[in-house]
Length: 301
Picture (cartoon, helix red, strand yellow):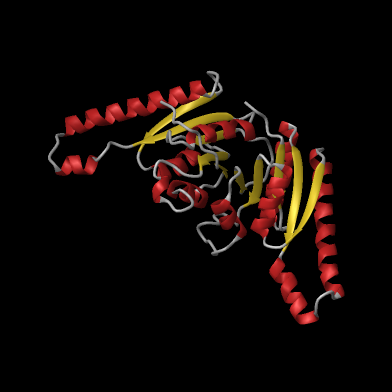
């Protein structure tokens, strides 16, 4: 397992952003990764200022200077609280473009961003930074909701054995090195409603259910073995039902403080930019959510 080496945290100086950058600093301290804190001054705000006051007006420079002071103060506070070195970067332009450019510059292993309230995708305003960054992200993205009072204790990793699953498990170990992992697989009896409609007896359907559970369990244990997980450091959670609902239920039932999902799932071809399960988890989970954007060449068998 390769440790994190570079973390990029974006802030707009709001309360959710403060939670996010604090978590990023804690992760940097736990893993030894370099931490960069950035803020993007809105290009539209500067354009509007120029429209009203003219290009080169002193107010434009004052706006930039104030943003720089706020960024440097936030970095100093983080460094003092978490005892980590913090680099800063002030961007000028659309936030998503600035974040992606800086992520390339520092070769970030992880992007960290604050969520909007208790469910930023549930009350989504089209075009928000979080939503647009999630759709365009090519690097793992940690969406933070909770205060970083302690290292992650318990991470729920959703596995559907798609090309994104193995990478999600690897990313969970990198971002939560001290957490106990709960590997979740949600299974369903194939075509169960159609089987009932076709008059297939209950005993046969029950047999299919048992087979489906056994197969999901076998694949989950194989994934843990392939990832090099040691007994006692993880636990299995095999449940029946819709993955979107079961992930949210188990996150709360098992008191997990981090949920890890792939950007897409088995039906990625049907999703334009972001998997439906991932969208639901981001909207409904109360824990922090780590979205792995990498894809492996083959699934675990």
